[in-house]
Length: 136
Image 1 (cartoon, rainbow, N blue to C red):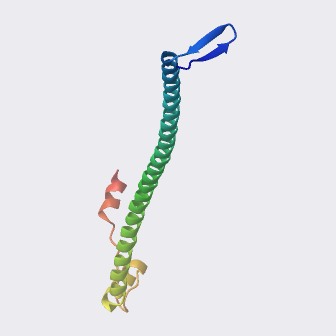
Image 2: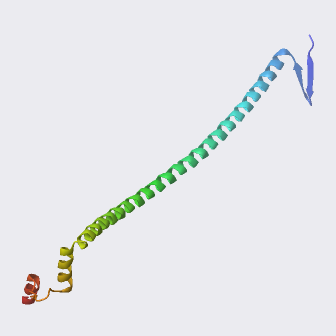
Image 3: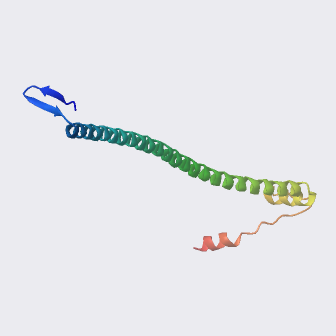
């Protein structure tokens, strides 16, 4: 049996099997602690990266939702405008048809511009609302 003797200043270590096993166990424990710290750092780094990515995607989702709501509001406004324009267009088409009718055109000119046919006498009567307002 060979025994190694290690000297560390005033303390001398006997290199027997028990001491070697204890030193090996201590080295294994230190290595295990080192690996544990490395794993914790890696897990922390990955979780940090995951959190940053999640926050980025979350902000994109919120931005897209706000943009969608804004566009939906614009669509509603434009649909109201479209409905109004379509109604105006429909009214104008009806008016064009009526203006192509000579009878309607004559009545319109007589009413609006107070024209009359030759030999015709036009009497203007006061309206009912104006006579009530005049009394008050």
